[in-house]
Structures are given as structure tokens and as C-alpha cells.
Length: 244
Ligand code: PEP
Ligand code: MN
Image 1 (tube, rainbow, N blue to C red):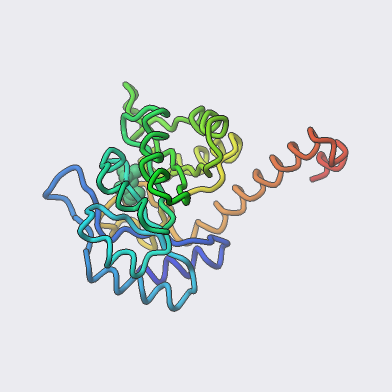
Image 2: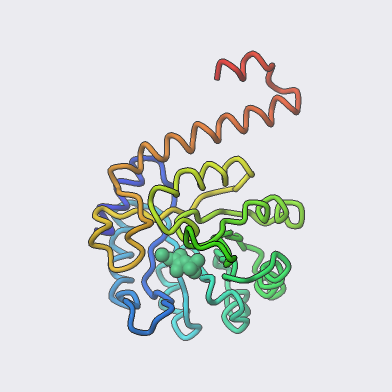
């Protein structure tokens, strides 16, 4: 399934594969990820596709085995405040994909990033993935304003995870478009060949067969936004933009 997913998203233009091996679940009784043996799966998928892989590190004791295979390490929302983990990753050269905590402020996210940076590792990517509010009509509230504010406050790239915010497939495209419009540097999207069989987060996963159409819409908006920015900068005449 991992390979099938990777090949499908790669064909549609995805550049990096993110797959969870160790899963930090709210309940200890929920599926915790396949663990170490899934590192072998990831290894195989990486060798076959040539795609760089990102996977989550939940426990500092797993650093070595994860670093062996991962091109970047995710620190999940529930671990954003795990300063021992952040410090240890700061002592590596691995890019760190740092997700915003469920109830963390922008300041707290930036300070968490600082734990990595001040150890000498400058490769931090921030990720807005939705925060807890009073709203319950979807899983988390995607804080698009935070993306704009983070761009004001830091040079670090900011990506958006629309999947965990949405909680359901139908909302993933609209939230992705909002993320592109606000200037996200990338999107982290969950995709599965058979979401109804997924052991975790199936409701929010796009199907592999719908990913190409999704990707096209995201790309088109991205191109339009870049055109608008170029026009504001006086690089593209407005008429050209309209025909695009
Ligand atoms: C995930 O990325 O699969 C995940 C568990 O996300 P978060 O840490 O944002 O809840
Ligand atoms: Mn998930």
C-alpha cells in the first residue's frame, strides 16, 4: 500500500513522501503504527521511487534508527513541547518538520523551533495543522492567519497540513486552496489507496485515484497566485495574467 501510494502521488507531482511509522495516538489502545518493521517498508519505497521520506520521531531513543532512513524527521503536534526531543534533533543535521501543537500559540511554535535552531540545526520547516477552538464542525480549525504571521516573523518555510485540520476528505481541497492563497510553502496531504481500510485517519485521506485532480487544482491556484505577485511587482502585465 505504501509503494502503491508513493507511485501514484509521485506520478501526479508530489515531491516528498511522508509516512508514519511510530504514531503518537491520543489513546494507547489505538493503532500505534507498525513500528520498526515499517522502517523497512519505508526503505523499500524510498529505494524504488527515489523519493525523499519524512517520518515522525516520537521518542528520542528511536533517533538513530529513524535517522538511518529518514531524509527529514517530523515532530508531531503532540510532541511540539517535547524539548528533549527538539534539542536532540538540533544536534543533528536532519531537516525537522515541526508541527504546531494542538493549543500552541504562534510564539510557542517559534520558541519550539528555537530549541532546534539554537543547537545549530537550521533546517526547520514549520507546519500549521489546525488548532483547537470551540468549533466542532470539523476536526481542527486551520489557522491560515498563522501562516501569514509566521512569514512575517521568520525566514523558516511554512507548510500546511489540511488533512488533520479537515478530518474529512471533502474539506481537504478547499483548505489546501486557502493555504496556497495565504502563501504556504508546501502542503502535507494524507493519501491512501483504500481509505476505508486505513488503520488511522482514513476519513481525511484523499484516494490515490483522486490525487492527480487535486494536485492540478492546487498547482493552478499556485500559478495564479505567483502571477498575481509578479504583477504586483510589475513583472507581468495584467492582460497576460487574465489569459492565464
Ligand atoms: C500526522 O501527521 O500523521 C499526525 C499525527 O499529525 P499531528 O501530529 O499534527 O496530529
Ligand atoms: Mn495522520
